[in-house]
Amino acid sequence: MKLLRLFSLLILANLISTVALPKHALAQVTELTATVDRNTVLLDESIELSITARGSADRGAINFDALKNDFNVSTPSISQSTQVINTTMTRSVTWRVNLYPKDAGVFTIPSFEVDGKRSNSFAVTILPLDAQNKNEPRDYFVEASLNNDSVYLQQQLLYTIKIYLSKDIQRGNLSLPVLEGAIIEQLGEDKDYQEITDGISYRIIERNYAIIPQSSGEFEISGPIFEAQVLTSSRQSFANFGRTRSIARRAPNVTLTVEPMPENYPYTWLPSDFVEVSEQWQGDETTLEVGEPITRTITLTAMGLTKEQLPKISSLYHPSFKAYPEQAQLSSVQHNNSIVSQGVYNTAIIPSQAGNYVLPEVRVPWFNVKTGKTEFALLPAKSVEVKPASSANNVPVQAGVNDAQNSEDTSTELVQAPSQEQASDLTAVAANNTYPNWLVYVLVSTNVFTLILALVLWLSRHNQSTEAKASEGKPVQNSALTEQTSFAQLKAELEQGKLDKLSYNLNQWLSLLLGNNHHSISLSLSKQAQSDAVNSALSHYNKVLASQYSNKDAKQDFPAFIKSLQEYRNNVLQTKPTSPLQALYKK
Image (cartoon, rainbow, N blue to C red; front, side):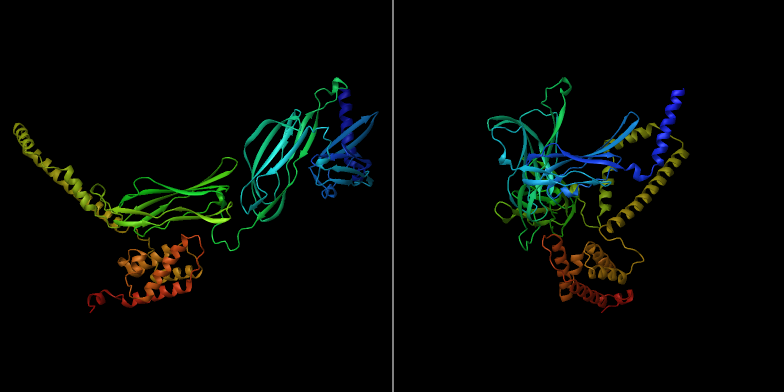
């Protein structure tokens, strides 16, 4: 117990003395030394720099920025040690960094200072790779290559790293290549194979990267760094058996030229060597039926592009087709050392009128990086025939479906008159069974009441269904919203150039202006075709719709569009009856 108390008191006294000491006493450094593991290396090798401070020093006392002009500097590793010899305690702090030379030559490791103590400065020699002794083959080195040293902006290039190993390693790690602002992605798994170089058998680990530059100009891709633990070759004693040492090899830098996008390029920029667009239909697309939905799937495939680079594909359909596009499904896979991206665009189409129609072609412009020219992935125009709704599916898409006829037909099928044989059988059964008169009256009254109640319920549901069908396809109107307010909202949206809700706002205003005479935007604007204002308003609206399905940025004349709508509104208000009596006595 006495020894335990004495030990506790010593620890407490040490803590109190540590806290009580002034800051400069804790940070007192008596000696500062700098050493390297080698002072002559090849350009792709590394130098380990160690700086040791005798005494207590702050962990952030050393700044290695002075080395960054000539070397790539790794993150420092810091270790602290404390030794007690004959009641004398000594402390030390050691900083270790790996230096990766940027060029060949003789460079100076500068002097560092901590608490007034300075380390020694010295020179290191960096030899070019061709200065190595051919008679002394290298055990470990790394090579880097590009499939193309000149590419277009956002064009994928293939970057390959090969690690050459003539001796075994315990474990290793490879960093990423560096190109500022570029997209860098590893392609597939590492390849491991044997190869003989200069008469030496090497194990080669190959790794491929896809690099997509995001800016044009002249660049240098900084090679990745390979770090590994290898067994020491010392056999002086059993104590060194199984010990490892660290090695580091850096791949050489590779220069790259990135050409800009052609000047005034009019399309969405898709640099690739292969782009394809295809389509599939869930059903027979050549013969459609009114009211029957069919799904059209357009698939865009592009090599060397990420899924984020794929454009939107929108198809313009005839007004007699109702189109409901789904959200695009975008994905990317790796194939043959390339990124392959695919966009799947599904659209549900419902024809509303019978006839023969032409679905316009789908064109996706892309830039062929092999030929340096713009090409088009094309879906040709397609002729389709829309047949009237069949008797089995006699439910037209337009509002006002005649459900009463369907209900009457169904009731006719469910309630049929009995045949002659069935009637005779019923008569026989009735003759053999006699019931009191009061029971007959009760049963008859109950049946009559049930039939009347069923008839009332059917009429109520039929009226609700007819009203719902009649209102289908029309915009939901706010009872407090007036035609003047709706037109003011539409005008404000156009003045600001907002087109995302144009069709909805225009449909709502026309519904308030024309009432039951409004069925669709195009039909309402074309009813008075003899008016130049009508033709102008419809022309502006069609131009806006066309621009939303075009890759070109078409300039819109919004003031002229607003003026044509104002003239159209004035024409309608001048011819619109102001009261029911005026409509009745109109000459």
